[in-house]
Every structure is written in structure tokens, then in C-alpha cells.
Image 1 (cartoon, helix red, strand yellow):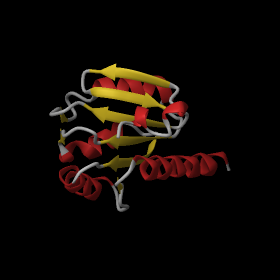
Image 2 (cartoon, one colour):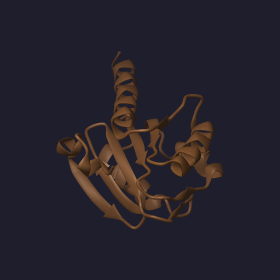
Image 3 (cartoon, helix red, strand yellow):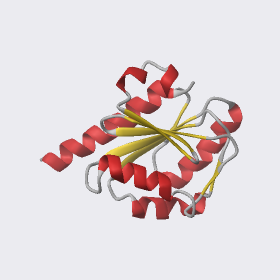
Image 4 (tube, helix red, strand yellow):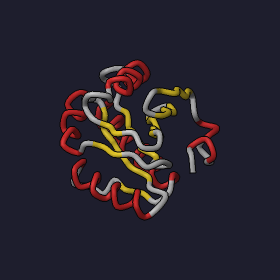
Length: 142
């Protein structure tokens, strides 16, 4: 299910089509839906980074949810580079919609953090990422 088909669609503040897919912006999170068959790596992700920085800035905590409505690949060895560039990214999740994307999300989860970031539905993914960002905002205000 695409984010625009979910109960969260009414909360989307901005959507942008990019060469790799679409980004949907909320107050504290962005949901990215990559196009079918694209490969994500440090060399082609700059357009996404620019959009995220333009929307969230360089210090405001935010989260990203990759909604795997299509099949795509990601260079897992670039994940640490992604984290270094986006210092204020404090939460990440992946939603899968079939067994193949679930397997990829589990592998990606192992490279991203010590926590499981894989979700089987958009609601669980959005709620997890949003709660992690809200915790980070609360900690930074105290």
C-alpha cells in the first residue's frame, strides 16, 4: 500500500517526485517510495539528501521510512556513509509488502542498527519512526 492510499495520507504536508521515486513529507518524518528496479548508493542518493535537508534542515531531528511498494536494491556498504551525511536522521524503518521485500528489509535492518527496523505494514512503520523521533526531540529539549 502506498502512503497516499493509507490513513496517513491526510497528514502529508508535501510530496515530491524525484528521479529515484517519491518523497512524502510529514512534520517529523519522510516516507520514501523508490521506483521499481532502481539501485540506491552513495553516488545517486544526493537528490534525496538535498530534499531532506531542504525540508528538515541540518539540526532538526527527523526519521525516514522506506515504503517498499516496489522492488529496488541498496548498496548496504554505503549505509554508514548515509548516516554520516545526515547527522540529524535519528530513526529509520522499512515497510515490506511481500516475502521478497521482507527478506531484503531484514538484511537491511541488520546493517542499519541493533534494533529491528522492518515492519509488515505502513501503520507500524510510521508509528515506530515517529515515536523514535519524538523521543529524540524530547531528549534534545531537556
